[in-house]
Image 1 (tube, rainbow over the protein chains, first blue to last red):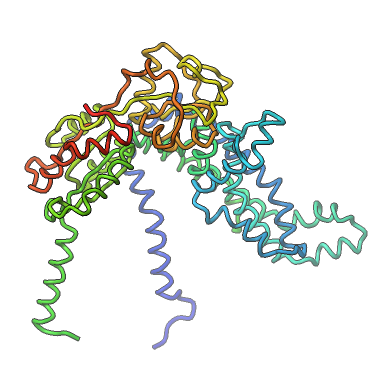
Image 2: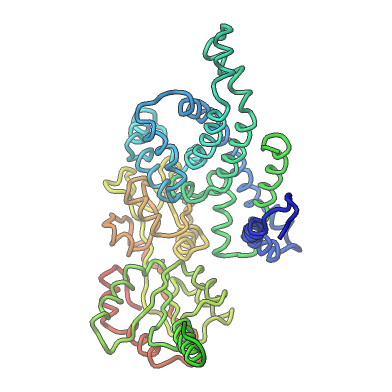
Length: 262
Length: 248
């Protein structure tokens, strides 16, 4: 039995098709139930616009924090020989496997008013993180950071040290090497990592509602607004979900051309 | 490999067994009871107390927020009895045609101001909840506890400076108990369960949620009727009172 050599294996095509259907069906289900006739009216409601604003502020701030904190960590994991390397990696991956509500509860135990560190923040600086927008940013950063770090770290490992060693022998200082050689060499991964982190932060629910609470205009993000709307006005919940879908798609499509591979 | 008519017979028997297991709640001896989440601990105790009683039907409990339960019914979930945390939710279920009959109230839950252990906010009266400098929590207005809290604030003419509107009363009570909030408006039962101090109780005396009970099937089975009577019995009443509920 002969087959043209470049025809893809049927099994893989079937598998891929099932995967696409699995991912697309819920989206189709959502769009099909959306209250299209009242959509604009529902989405321009003051409460929804508030939630959109909070969501954008929180998710973008979290993405920025992921960049600032995640770059050094990714670099350290990829380039340094850290004792307890495996433990550090496990800690980095932990927010990915922890149920978000557990993560939020853990954040309360650490940074809440009676928390390990939080109690000192409160006593010495009068700084309270729970029930504030900053708290929502912390919760979102906590869950999104692993996505950024793992993306950039694997790119750094793949890149290898050749360019950096060449720069070092040419007399570049370690920091300059990092800024002008290392970073540009993994800029695609940094972009992809930020997109992933931002998307994760935008969709964050459990840790936010547990740590930062839920108050309109301050901590009520779009996912929280959706959840509450499900209790009283399911059609509004679907409308807000469509909005979330639209915002996510818009950004991911916009980034696709510039940051993601291909 | 079992072939021929033996195989077919075996398959039919197997399918019958599976389908009877998956059939609607009223087909078997298990009575499915949907109960509002604030009743969680009470219904667990009721279920336990029935465990040794052979004459009592076996219960399958579904505990969730009242609106969530009604939404599940609307989406086609199988249940025999519904207990909501307030009259409004039960009436809505009734209006939507999800309930065949209402059977009155089985419990009352009072709204209280619970304060964090040690009362760090120094809260004594409802008016203190308007203090912007304190961390105050309420339930979201869409859940029964939140509706009651909003009603009480409106009736007393006080603008509660809430820092969070929790999705359910348990998580709110937990945050007060953990000291993350200075105070909050929760149910008496949650305050009792977590041993929280309450203040200014007399003024809130008239703010009460009624737990309404309803049946889904217009022609309930004997087991369902038995369960209904059981839930309205003195024995269950005692369990409810011990949890901090009041009887209607």
